[in-house]
Amino acid sequence: MPIAAEGVNYVYMAGSPYETKALDDVNLTIEDGEFVALIGHTGSGKSTLVQHLNGLLAPTSGRVLVDGQDLADKGTDRRAVRFHVGLVFQYPENQLFEETVEKDIAFGPKNLGLPQEEIGRRVREAMQKVALSYEELAQRSVFELSGGQMRRVAIAGVLAMEPKVLVLDEPCAGLDPRGREEILGLIRRLHEESGTTIVMVSHSMDDVANLAERVIVMEHGRIAMDGTPREIFSKGEALRAMGLDVPQAVELAEALRARGIPVPEGAYLPDEVAQAVLSAVGGGQQNAG
Ligand SMILES: Nc1ncnc2c1ncn2[C@@H]1O[C@H](COP(=O)(O)OP(=O)(O)O)[C@@H](O)[C@H]1O
Ligand SMILES: [Mg+2]
Image (tube, rainbow, N blue to C red; front, side):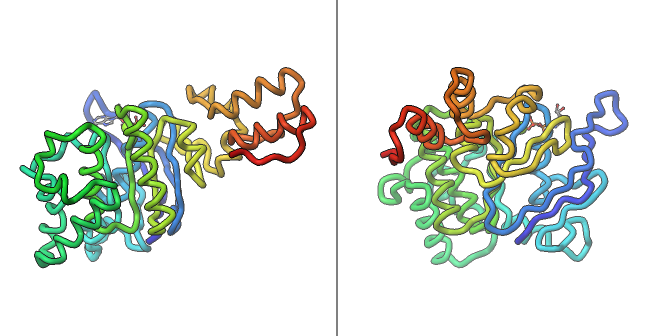
């Protein structure tokens, strides 16, 4: 289920004094099985872009194709597309509303008109995927849960639609370190074990470095860079000029180089930097861990 954006422009409140061009000639293709991180300064258009990927927003001009089908075509089953491309909003727990965890996760599958048995199976499976115990939590009110648990319930509701592509807009925002680790772990598992295509908006360059296979950098509604983490994070100066950070390992590599320790250009993972230090001090080949 590849997704392609072709010359996508999007304007908020066109014709009003508040008119804002949020997307400016965006072109990209996301292939099956990719793990794409979307980064960029606040206001660069990330949230607007991800809402185009499942047809929640329609381009002002240009087109978005899901599996080769133009979402704006009359013949395209937009409802079906929305189920194949699951979108987890920022702070998705704000949209939980049912009395119990089970009902909330079942809401989407129920709307699909699936048989009761199938709905039950999907709820259990989705809860398992987000590491929430069905026995313990299914009948609880979502408002009795921790912030991290509520977020996972919201994600489970999207997973219960069994999407092929999962798009997450800052899925760790506002969570404590433990909550963040849980969310990142489940996203990694979905990608590795189920082969789900992931598009994740993130502010954390360390999370991006750890997880993503491809990084797209947005600036002023445009795609400023698109490449592997190694390619993107070797352009520290350009990233900083856009108001973005680099992963901590990149900063450490720069500090080491400034002190005469030869860390290879493009190193962006802690292990690579550690290995370079070991080699420099004559420690030879050693594996971390
Ligand atoms: N609902 C909206 N109405 C008007 N302008 C908006 C709306 N949502 C976003 N914008 C504007 O569009 C631009 C892109 O915003 P957004 O896609 O939210 O960026 P990001 O997610 O990267 O922070 C910003 O200038 C923002 O102020
Ligand atoms: Mg946003």
